[in-house]
Length: 144
Image 1 (cartoon, rainbow, N blue to C red):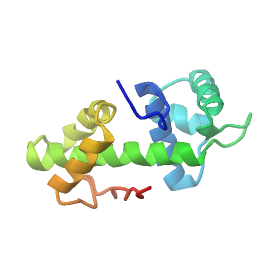
Image 2 (image 1 turned 90 degrees about the vertical axis):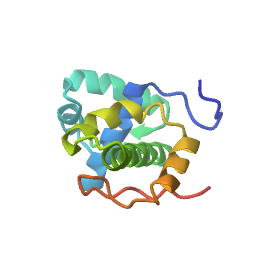
Image 3 (image 1 turned 60 degrees about the vertical axis):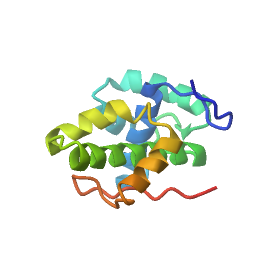
Image 4 (image 1 turned 30 degrees about the vertical axis):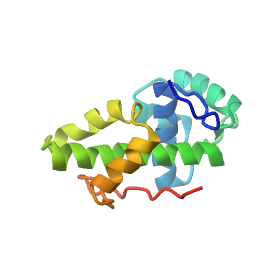
């Protein structure tokens, strides 16, 4: 159970949406419903319904028929999830010797359970890596 009152309670599915939009936004600045549906391998109607929830939670801006973008809070959460995901990929590959081809799927599952505190400790343990095994940059999280 999460105990941070400033962090909204999100399901793993909602976190997956935020991370997908974050990743697509890194490339395009914003994401279309079609882009999100393709990335998550879901129907556009399913994505549209979930975007309504994230919009109500003030995590995304999702105008009808427009590009989807993250709010400041949504971007911070997407960035943090990406940090955890890529850090886990490094740990799995370099420390546990999981083949590079397998680390993404494993990290997808683990990123949701990793607390912020343990993620910070893991980053220190790994000597603050800058890139994951696939060459993607690990975001640097700003301290509040």
